[in-house]
Amino acid sequence: MIGPSAPLAPSAPLALTMYFALVSSISFGGFPTVLPDVRNFVVGTHGWMTDQDFANIFAMAQSIPGPNMILMMSFLGSKVWGFPGAIASAFATFGPPCTIYFASYRLWDRFRDAPWQQIVRLRLIPVVMGLVIASGTVMARAADTSWRAVAVTLAAAAITLATRLSPLWMLLVGGALGGLGLL
Amino acid sequence: MTEMAKRRELGQAVPLGALFTAFLAVSLYGVGGGGGIVWARRIAVEKRRWISDREFADIVSLCQFMPGPNIVGIAVCVGAKMRGTIGTIAAVSGFLVIPWAIGFSVGLLFLEYAHLPVLRNILGGIAATAAGLLIATGIRLLLPHQRRPAALLFAGLAFGLITFAKLPLLAVLFVLVPLSIAIAGIEKARVR
Image (cartoon, rainbow over all chains, first blue to last red; front, side, top):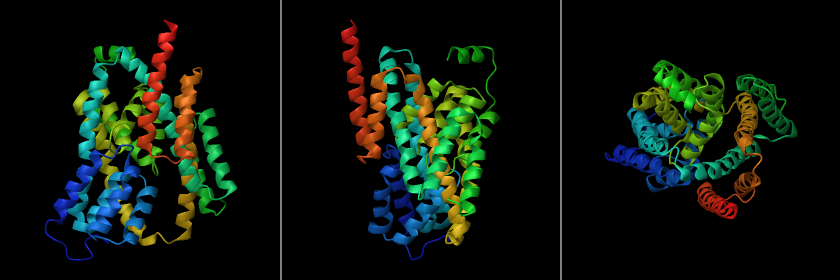
């Protein structure tokens, strides 16, 4: 599974790592915004893997626990350069954004009582929360293939709002219902 | 915020190990895309009471505007808030190191067995539940703004433009946020 399926140019690992570092620095809004470009780079431009390889890796990265975007890039990296490729891709994917997050949080924190920040805060947060609810809905649209699955989504939302029950129990019940073929 | 400052003065710093394990849990529990925000709020706000809901909403909003995996950004910001640079390193390591190793191994296995229907059904059930959790977290963080009609209008617009008009996230952010801030300016001028 790990390792290239075809002989590669010696510069391939470097090209891939540089590319991931660049892409992670411009992936505003997270991974979905750069996904098409990544596919073009690894499948189209360089032919490091097939479309089927790419689709399998994406489906898997979406459904296992952990830092999905970083894992996805690591699997792509491992296709090109084995285990070292996986490690290099992981660092290239989280390193630059972490530096940016840290610097901007420091800046934000320093000016936390500035009047402009109060205005931005009050106006920005509702928009962002609308986006969070939207990504939940987009996920639901992909996951809810029956009315019973829709009911599970609604129940999970209602229970979260009304109680402090741990989400873990709900995920377990949801997974069990799915596993028993009830959804 | 003031409570935090007090705690810092008293020298009751959050242990680095606690930051590590908290974000380890956030990472492991967050199944599928977007699950992390549910668990980050649950653990940092509800269980450990490190930050308030308002501060959490601040951090999430800040991270939305930055490139990269946004949940890692939450780890960076909460770590930086509690313990500065070293806190960031602890939180990010907790979030990444062990979960990456587990995810990478599970992923290799998964690629072998991805065709099994039972596995697919279980993941389907988890995904349906996770979607509901995400919707509820967004609603809950919006609750402090429920008395301001302009806030609800812009939340609704953001939701609709992504869900129904299917516009790219970046376009929605960079159109709605300046508009929302401009309207705040007009409201303020009128009050004066």
